[in-house]
Image (cartoon, rainbow, N blue to C red; front, top):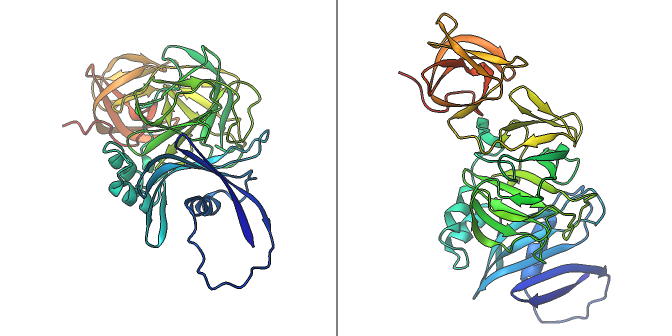
Length: 392
């Protein structure tokens, strides 16, 4: 079986795609076979890593940096255009030695090790690439992201598609679709940005702290990014219908997804822009909660901005307000109330009387910055324990 390769090197970007295979009779030879090329090695890893259930329309090997025997770039499993089946992509680092090309993909130990030694990986990127290699996935019980929604704070956009998979209907439901407003897609949190598609269009990944990353697809007029430092709110591109790496887009929007430790993770339970996302039994039908306010697909999401790591959102569990107390329990005097959906600052926490709210039963009470206390059962914080230490 012989595989013919097509490769184009232009402006530092190498794009490769597999051609058709053919059966041929090889002539006897005493020469040893040439070692696999970079494109062959990376494509083999893509074939091994990509979802076997997804339709494929080829592979892109996109080299964005090269120095001697070292290479950095992206590898993409391209999907057919017009189908609800989005592409998969990885950053990679490679080095050629006496045995051939050694390649590490995001999430692999080899990626962290090669990155640490590579001259084409910057000093700022090295710790970033190492932090995502070995940590547990899926939040580990901590659902705080420190992220806003990917558009301007204080504005509202429509959510045409609730929680669904990055590739469409598969799990985990890591993505939501957002559209409207001024159409400007902004970074949900500061980090380091990369363009994933070989032509530089449509798809940007931003790697953040704490192992998180966010993906933005279907962008129009997106920025060029090859390890570009971005701040929260940096312009990434406009909503669009770009499908440079495959997939489908029926109307202009951003396909926005959450990743942690180099893999897509369920967006459910995470807070972005003041909203906690929830799954439905089927893809695209999940909803978002801000306190007791619920928004279903087609509804409007107001961007409250990133929730701080020592903040919470009051959830009256269908009521209008939650009581505040002078101490951690219902045996203490009333000290007013706080409205559903209010963002509060937590100074510390302590065990008190037990109560049950939307997120379950809890005996934890949180002392607010004004000195009053609210049951943790009526507050979303992203943790089941204290977010700012235990009160004395």
